[in-house]
Image (tube, rainbow, N blue to C red; front, side, top):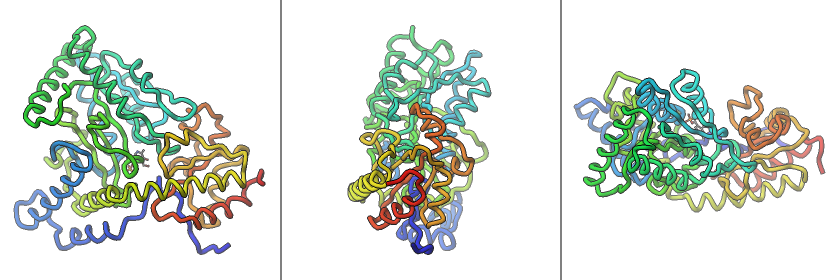
Length: 429
Ligand code: PLP
């Protein structure tokens, strides 16, 4: 086996930037380098590029106004702004903590801000457990809602096991809850200030709706946030079909550049900025805009959208071939999480009795790049919280690896991976 060949099967961690994306970014480093806030020609050119990029993202998400699209430095940052920004807006109204809901299988950029808000004494948190397939029952979210719930954040597709959550139904449950709070003040937030803030938002949203004629739902807390980083290139992203109020994604997972993310904030959703110091991004994310990365992000999204069906079909078929080949060499191997409700690129497999980290290193030495769920977990040698939440043991979690395919993956890459994996398994056919 040649040591020179490198097979990359870690597309859920990051993707190579498309040449077309690199091409459109190029002029904004040296030629059109202006500060988008400047009013001279260089600044105007930069602002035009930002406006065009924002328009592309707005259309991709089916958003109704440009101001609903906020460019950030990453999805991690976007998640933090959505979560901490909501809590700080509503926390300690009337001296009471707020309540927020998430799931036990979120990416750390969602889980950690929730834990932080909890540790700071700003919020009580409900962590919803998935079933053994990694699927969250929307009914459990309904049951967890409280009169003072201000935010529900559920990831669209899981980064470790690829399981897809029923975001439209969860969004509908939250919308119904909001409407029942408006109709029935008895179940409205316990704090009068919170109630007033919610009603004010509802009123504002209603008048916005009338103006735009686009939305017809009344607006109020709780807000519904979804981290759509792993879903962006494969699944429906229309925010109105998803019934979502806050949505995050990242360019580098869709063949765009690293260092740029997007936060969609539905009109009428009020959150506190985490940073202060400038007017950029409607004051939600101040700081001089990185025009090149933003332009690249928008082009990557356009390309992903154009080729969505074609790429999904190709990757799905190759993924199924890979699972079949894994089962040939290791019939005892178990796929973690639902196979049906899953992104087409993800395989997360438990080789019971093996050490995932050793497999990872062994594969890497043979030129194959895979992961232990997340790139960060692989470094820390931790047992995945996601796989343990499926009811599996720490040992099984440690015996699992994530293989994620992308649009450049070919059948021969899968065969190369299997040839590298087979001799590394202690229990093999
Ligand atoms: N959310 C999910 C589901 C992810 O998979 C990732 C990256 O792995 C992130 C958030 C963080 O994205 P970024 O690297 O842009 O901060």
